[in-house]
Length: 531
Image (cartoon, rainbow, N blue to C red; front, top):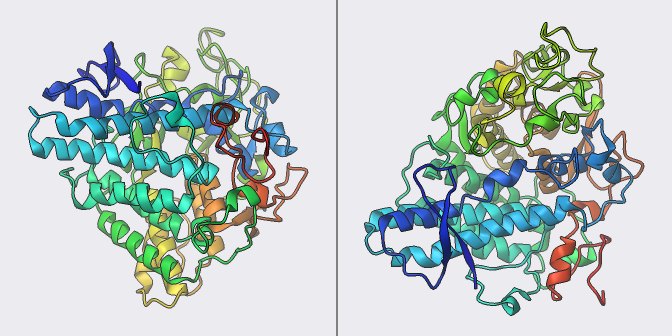
């Protein structure tokens, strides 16, 4: 019997279970309907959770495979990525799979039951349906980008046997679940077409996700997989395409659709201040479009301890793991003139001891590298050990950079795009960073992907960028020296070159154990029994 905990909804994050809700319950009241919709959000805060091993974090698992991360503690298992011995039994893959599918299940339950909430006005039911379908689309979007073909489930499972399902082509997941859900939210639902001020989905949020979906579908693996949806691309690893932008009618149409959403959002947000990123008082404000919600002492952001130097006692946290850090080579690829490289803008290289260890708060030992200022929640680090700093899923700078990429790609594919439309987004980002503007004529994919790497550093964007473009940035001094095919690229600290295997991640070993119809991705372990 499928079900979720039925939450009191006095506060968005204050989850107080009052019973068990299943699809057999009769929920007709307005509070019951709001609880249904709110339940679909409960998987989001787990994004910053741990990987069940000291020093590991789930955000780290989305940075480590890019080849541009550093960790000071081996328990984070970065070394397993660097030596290519990672597999699908690791909590990095089992936990994320379970988290995102829990979100899918909660959304499916709400989608089934919201029409029966008869005491709620139809306009409100439509709004909440827009929220829940946007969330289901987002969870599936995460799943297909990480694993490729996944289990398609849009109904409430009634028994264990219902969970025995083969994987569905990623093309069908996009075409039949992700895109219809988001297009409903944007074009049909009663969601307000405004910014989100409390972490709940609005049409602005749905538009941002939909633009990202269209841009991703215009690249890989969607464009190659759609050439033959009967072929088991993920199991055979028979990927061959590398061209970007992809020159197909489908890709061009999807880029045009992405442009529509991005053009709508353009100018509706400030780019904000750099200091907004690590200031909980700026949660859901400034350039924030969609953030995972945290509240100090109620639901804390679990990432903060992993961004701190290993055991240097600069914080009041019981642990400081030093496992969510950009690599030295990545940091060296920034232009020294970039404002983001100034001390305490995007990074910091020194600090004081926390008062609990040194009442005088003397300088801590010299740091071995720079750490992420964008997650430096000062109150949590120096006083409370509780962080209510939200985690950005989409912010305006990301919209600006996607807009530039989409317009650049369309121009490369023969569509007439005004020069200013191509460069305005990226140049707004660069102007804030104190860097020279680009011209439309000279703009390259290297420029665009470099700026995404600089601006969105360690916001869990690069892995998706690598996979949808099948390109990787080559580290350098003061700049990324080039951009090359992902397959054949060898990160500085890795002992192997990326292959077709690394275009996807291993399917959860737990899913393989529980679902005998589920198969593993190309060259990954563990295999399904009989594979």
